[in-house]
Structures are given as C-alpha cells and as structure tokens.
Length: 189
Image (tube, rainbow, N blue to C red; front, side, top):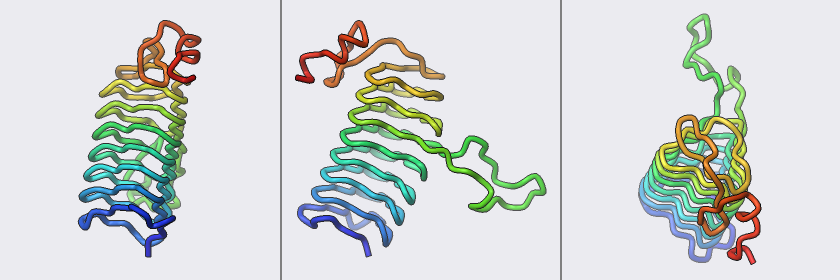
C-alpha cells in the first residue's frame, strides 16, 4: 500500500507504478508511466511528468516539478521548489561496473552510493547529467545539456561539459552581473 499524506487532490495516472511503501503528499500529480519505488518520499504540490523514475529512498521536497523521462536514483535529495527539465539523469555510483574483477555479477553490497543534493529553488536544464556526490546550491541554474561534475554555488549559472560558471541568476531566473546582485534582487523581497 502507498502511504498518502492527506489524500486531497492527489492524482496518480493509472499507468504509473507506485510501489508499496512510497510516501506521496497532498496535491501531487504523478503522470503516465512513472515508477516510484518503495521508501521514496514526495512532498506536496509536486508534478512528475511522463516516464519519471524515482528510486528507493529518494527524497523530493514540495512544489517540485520533474519533467518527462527524468531518472532520480537512490542517494538523491531534491529540496523544495526545484525544477528538473526533461531527460535529466542523476547518477549515484562513482565507479560503475556490472561485474567484480572475478567476473561475478555485482550485488547491492558491492558498491557505495554517493549522495547528491539539489537545494531549494534550483533549476536543471533538459538533458543534463548530474554526477553523484555533489551539491547544487540554492537558486542555481544549470544550462540545458550540461554535465555537472562538481558542486554548484548558490545563484550560479553553469553551462557546458564539464559545466562551468558563466554568471549568476536571481531567484526569478534573470541573469545578474554579480553574486551580490543575484542575492539582493528585488524578486526576493
């Protein structure tokens, strides 16, 4: 059975698979072909688009929008108000292998999950890849197609492969000339 926090206005499309033990909060919408694993927690007023995969133990805050075909793997925490564009992939293993050196199939005990955190209000552009073990700061913006391999500071605008800092954005997403201007923007008052 799925644990529903305050059943009001929760929508789960009939083609979605929500495993027993997942926690879904009020006014959240889970669309076509999503798969939500056991022990995943999804906050209030979230929207998960078509084909989103949320792995076991993932924590998603409130008012998060995750676009189509995003993979959110074990070890990822997404805080309140985050936007994740279509086809974003979060990784969780720094040394991925299918087998051990003796060619035996790897099991859950043969790897260590690396945790990733996406902080409040951040936005991740379509087709970006987020390497595990990093933090994306508050209100940061990741340009479409970026490969993020290290921590991203609050309010940073990063693009490319590997993603590099090219400027700053305020909470409303407008480009700013300095970090101070981004933090002190009128949109946050």
